[in-house]
Amino acid sequence: HAVRCWDAEVENARRHAARLNLLLPAILAVLGFGAFNLGWVGNHSSDVESVWVVWIVKVLLLGSLLLFMRALWILLAVRQRRRARPTASHALRLSKDAESDPAGSDQRTARRTAFERTYTAALELRRRNAAEGVRIDRGQQALLVAILHALLAVACYTLCAITPSRSA
Image (cartoon, rainbow, N blue to C red; front, side):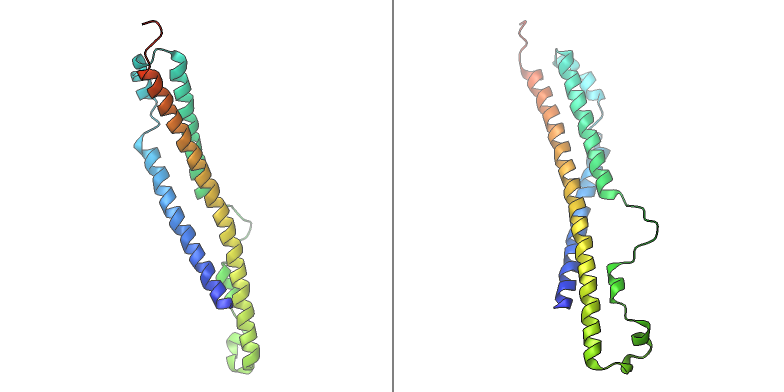
């Protein structure tokens, strides 16, 4: 049972890493693409007659940029600790006595010790996976809100650019 729990948590950790490996390049691609270069809004401001619309679009794009950066921060930030925390697999290590004299303990005690160590490590990995999952979910939420801000800015600009002015 303990080995199955450990294997399941290792698989969960792999899934979290795969999600992170999808999110980070997407965020970096958008930021590197230059989608937040606000010069294009100023160059095409003749398409939109209202100065307020141009400012609303700029504010929405700036908010979107900040939210993209927040998502990147959430996904990449590493908490600094006073002392390094050992990995979850550290709990799998046997005691000094068992390592030096494996034949010294009976089989039942050895099985019990292996079960306890493996299950303890699996529980620690489960706790870490849960924290990692929450962190990735928060990053995804920030990314979604950033995308919605950018789409709202594009929609606002497009609608105001194609809508005929009232003075015509």
